[in-house]
Image: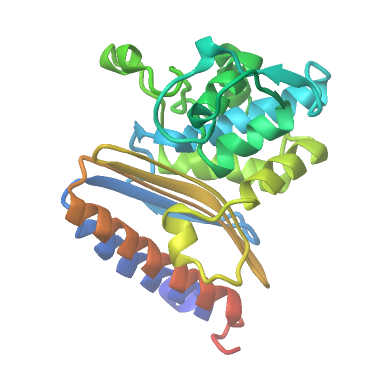
Length: 278
């Protein structure tokens, strides 16, 4: 399309992308992002096809598989599941601090997995749905680079190279499918989004204005920082993912700064008309 035939909003998006790309380019480590405007389906990104570790952001895929299995009748949200001693592991969460016999509903386990990034709850959820089931479900959305390969805190697995991975582009595609109910039943999407909205953490939780709803799941490992979610501005929603690896502490701060620039630009785009006025 010739430059003169672009709308004011399209010119703004081009300028915004150049600015955001420069911000991400300031990160010495590996990083990338992808943004989809849910009102148009158009995406912009930078290194959005590069495979990186997902850290806890892979829990979005586990949550989707859990909700899908409930929809299929293989589970019920109210089913009680014992938290057995063999399930215990380290890392984030609250279940590792509790003692005695514990039973939780499938819904409560899902909430703990997302809101508190509870690794014990996550591993139980993975057992309930299965890695193969989860990965097969991801393939139905055309996601070929997103893989659930190990449970949380499985050091032997990641040393073998069995890492949970995705790309910025595929995380956004997964979020878009959930938000648009594209191959996802309404009850599945509603449950996933409701649970993801129950927490507000990570990069997106930090840089999105407090009055704007966000449904996201951040993740982090040593030198890895990830966040992916849906941002609901009053007149426009966006699916966003930011991923970084090989990050120094300074890189981690720069990645958050870059995400802030992108979100500020989205807010302006959502506020203004095609001609750029509110």
